[in-house]
Amino acid sequence: GQQLNQSPQSMFIQEGEDVSMNCTSSSIFNTWLWYKQDPGEGPVLLIALYKAGELTSNGRLTAQFGITRKDSFLNISASIPSDVGIYFCAGHPKKAEGGGATNKLIFGTGTLLAVQP
Amino acid sequence: SAVISQKPSRDICQRGTSLTIQCQVDSQVTMMFWYRQQPGQSLTLIATANQGSEATYESGFVIDKFPISRPNLTFSTLTVSNMSPEDSSIYLCSVEGLMNTEAFFGQGTRLTVV
Image 1 (cartoon, rainbow over the protein chains, first blue to last red):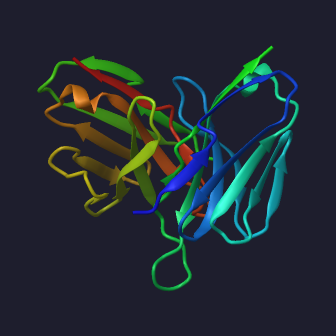
Image 2: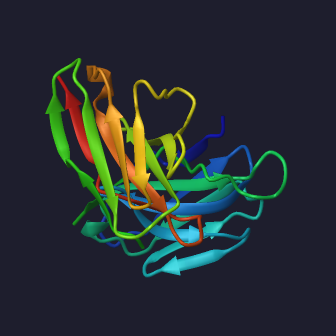
Image 3: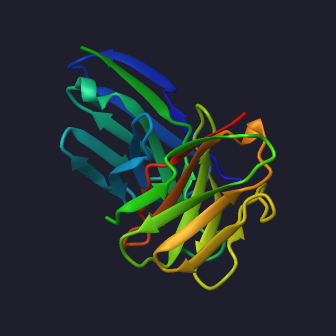
């Protein structure tokens, strides 16, 4: 089945540093979503991407939908302690026949971010 | 985005017993989704619950183990049956946004089976 490979698996950075993580797939995706999960909570949607090449920002966060539709990245600028958490990419894969997306959401393996004040 | 409430938020259960998790949404939604997140792992879709029809299960998940109810457009339950320690996970309810692309999650139910 489809898989999303997310890297890095974990990051330990100093407050103020920029962060970059990415997600790749062997198949085409019609949407890319980025989530953050805090301990004991469900994932919270950060950014949604709908078109190849799309670059979208949400405060200090920027994400892009790769041109090939098989990858996406998330950047966090000037990290702060509350950025700590697990970040997941997710996407709707393209249906095998036709151009529509499936309803099934596939999640990446996650990136654990630790920020030292 | 929809407000999704799950109950219980956590539970510790004896092996061999069953637990029913409730998911309440503050607006009517066509599809509701149940995910499992094993310790330290990503999210895996268990099934899609549509009102008025049987749930659609993903590979590796069966109705006898994870029966789902969807009595109306704002409510669903997931039962974890005949539990074993391997069922210890976070179980998450999810609904789609207006664009049918974003997914919004409840806070999850942390289940520990002893």
